Amino acid sequence: MMMKEPGTPEELAAALREAADAGQTIHLGGAFSKNAMGGRVAEAAVQIGTGRLRQVRQYEPRDLTISVEAGMPWCELEELLAG
Image (cartoon, one colour):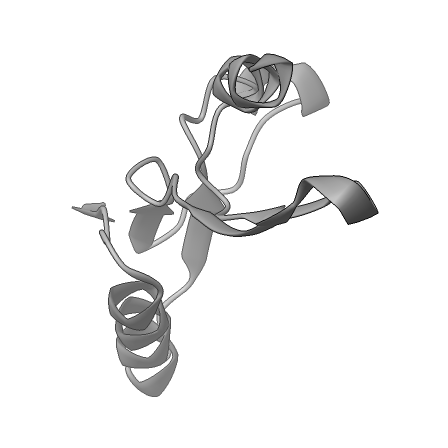
């Protein structure tokens, strides 16, 4: 299985597009720490991790809204919001 860890949304889109164009199956995840929770995961040709995608995209404290990238760990988000 090939592993890819894109660092930008554009790199993620390119990795997904490349796998789709090649007809490859994709296993998409963050840190893959919950893989065993739902039972066995089907084998895939490409594993794409979102762990490097952890930036805040938009934050409006007055509106109580925030947009973060897919790889931001929950504990980092809680820490950010606590400050």
